[in-house]
View 1 (cartoon, rainbow, N blue to C red):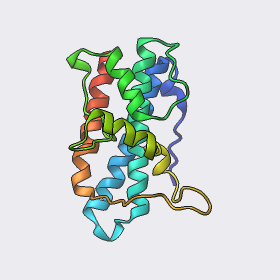
View 2 (spheres, helix red, strand yellow):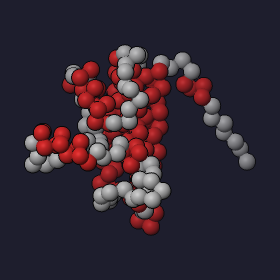
View 3 (cartoon, rainbow, N blue to C red):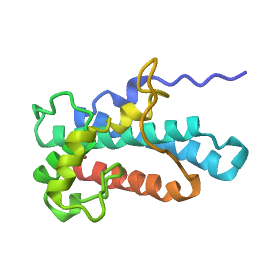
Length: 175
């Protein structure tokens, strides 16, 4: 048997933002691989795998946003947040130029609601961060997550591939 040792030497010499984007790319690649497996073999499609795909994708987006914010300012205060919408808002303020735009998955969209109604909804509902919601099978040891959940692998493939392309494009912007 031939072994192929992987070590962290490829990260040596990279800036901290570049390391964040390297990990973002890796999480996204894993999400693509599992999504592809689920799309090509319906017998392998299961909610537990779908939740893992969504968690990997959410974490990929989080690392992308944090890496870009650290590129702008290595001391950027992200307050240890996992709130993708808050991070995306910070990102949009720091990178308003069109070349930095990307369609961030995991945005809350409330069709037909005013901004005031959306804010009230978010405060009352307080949905968990996607990287938490999809990481754990239940809310606690005795409580389920609230809501209905579904996933269609073939459709999601477009979303995760778009994220992958955005990561590569934005990575080029900072290297």
